[in-house]
Amino acid sequence: MNFRTIIEPFRIKSVESVKFTRREDRVEALSAAGFNVFRLRADDVLIDLLTDSGTGAMSSMQWAAIMQADESYAGSRSFYRFEQVVQDLTGFKHIIPTHQGRAAERILFHTILSPGMVVPNNNHFDTTRANIEVEEAEAIDLVIPEGRIPHVLHPFKGNVDLAALDRLLDERGDVVPLVMVTVTNNSGGGQPVSLENLRAVRDICHKYEKPFFLDACRFAENAWFVKLREPGQADRTPKAIAQEIFSLADGCTMSAKKDGLANIGGFLAMNDDSWAEAARNLLILTEGFPTYGGLAGYDLEAIARGLEEVVDESYLRYRIRSTEYLGDKLIAADVPIIRPPGGHAIYIDAKALLPHIPALQYPGIALANALYVEAGIRGVEIGTVMFGMRPDGTEVPASMELVRLAIPRRVYTQSHIDYVAEAVIHVASQRGELRGYRLLEAPRALRHFTARFEPA
Ligand SMILES: *Cc1c(COP(=O)(O)O)cnc(C)c1O
Image (cartoon, rainbow, N blue to C red; front, side, top):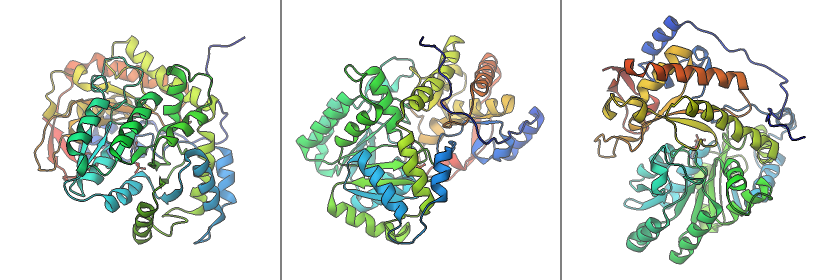
């Protein structure tokens, strides 16, 4: 008998209490936080869906690996175990540990970019874009048109627009040092990229002799979508698919806080010897010696074990299904979300839900704040506050106004998710009462983290 219920593929060995608060406490906490949920104390949040980054639960095997880690400064046994696992998965020659994904991005871009250069991607993640722009280079998004329209269904909405990539390399190839593709496409809704599309990107890169790098933060979730959706892939293991994905590229940046199933860490990996040498020199200057890169030996152990666990089929089946489960409930209640649901998060279309709030009064902030006040749930705006500030200081509406509810890995159970669905549907039923916000103060780069607002 094949039972239909997909259960959590683990039992719980240690628990952490969550704090229940009253609505009036949350109104006060949000106001004190400048109406920006990033500025809340996490203790005042009941269900925290701010991010799936570093918020996952580690397994007993990861904790056990932590206990037997080697904290030697140079040449630690834990580094060689980490390097072996990453090499087995990715096939890349040089494996450079970093304290998280953005450190890998900074080291890569600072060593290869100069002002006026251009880096294409399906959609740059916010830290990727910022690390390119800080070098006075340009970050260009080339996702397929379907990937820009929340309600349009497509099995691989993270795919790169191949004609647009070819055109860019044909016209401006001399200023493009590498091509990136983000798997899954976080800023575009956690949407996967097909193997077919990745192979075609690789071919275009070969044609123009450009290195191809992956932003690989959610490679395992992408591999699972390939297995489910791409013709001919159903019988392969997620690990074999992931290995093929990496084999198409010349390098990657990775945040181990996502599909590394760890609370901190990342790496930069590549085949090119001279880029790797420059990267290691910068690493030593700002992160640490190349066999730890700003991490403890025990972090390297946790990541090594996490990278083995994340490609487990029962884990990925549960992971992707539990995100889809929340999406199904919201779709059934006519809450507009990016469809189909992505791998790590549900993205509510705040522009469609709150058409009465103009983009420059931040409908995503209005919705995220209402979810917190009504239910103690913390999501995050991915819209004009995150992406609307141009390097020249002008503000333009983002192409989408989204609120992301990211699901931490192995943390919440089905009843937590049922509560989230009930709360979102309740807030959506009161949509007419929500009001926009005005920006009070914000830094220029990555302003969403620290901005303060007031009700408009
Ligand atoms: C999280 C993330 C990053 C940055 O990683 P950090 O570990 O947060 O620095 C880069 N790209 C994508 C797609 C991400 O999701």
